[in-house]
Length: 222
Ligand SMILES: Nc1nc2c(ncn2[C@@H]2O[C@H](COP(=O)(O)OP(=O)(O)OP(=O)(O)O)[C@@H](O)[C@H]2O)c(=O)[nH]1
Ligand SMILES: [Mg+2]
Image 1 (cartoon, rainbow, N blue to C red):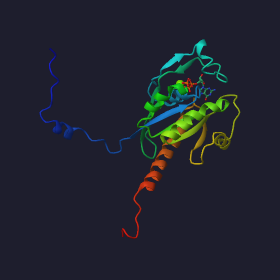
Image 2 (tube, rainbow, N blue to C red):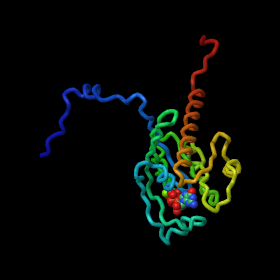
Image 3 (cartoon, rainbow, N blue to C red):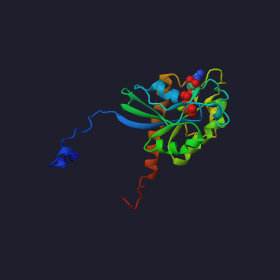
Image 4 (cartoon, rainbow, N blue to C red):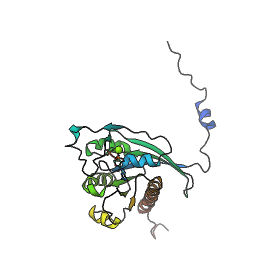
């Protein structure tokens, strides 16, 4: 019979002796990278991750072409079937950050996974391919519905028409409060910039909502 797992005589003492987080230790944040099918999510996570990214790619088959349109991304051979995972440290940000990046699968039929991947996240990046704008509506509505702050990053594919971010905002019916930026998902500096925009947006959002929910002081309280 296997021997039982040894238990400490004084579990509280073990907790007391555990090292506390170091002063100046980075703030760890979970971020979701979302967007329609083929918008460049896996590419963005791979571009910026300092570890070998975890990816769950499967080959697209002839049978899927009716369901997952490849118009505009004919060279695409694989698709994410679970999630991508990568990590990025930003020690020189105003607050040192360690970002855990979770890329979603693109197709709407994976929406249950989008819920799971969004748990505990501070915000999301919605990557947009303007040649396939319609596929962005579902992820945008998803984050609006669950109340997770998000930014829209227009992934500028080679040969695609370059729209001004404000034109994209109008086409996607986004309120002025949602940042819209452009990027090349293959460029680590671009992706890091988008992530910093999101962190900034999420922090502002949290500050505004805390202020909104703080008990207001009235003359009677004084
Ligand atoms: N030219 C160009 N190609 C890109 C860019 N981003 C992604 N690609 C290419 O577009 C294709 C789709 O990229 P992925 O990163 O797999 O897209 P995805 O959003 O993860 O796709 P799904 O997981 O299937 O939804 C790949 O062949 C990439 O090499 C970009 O910024 N410019
Ligand atoms: Mg992918």
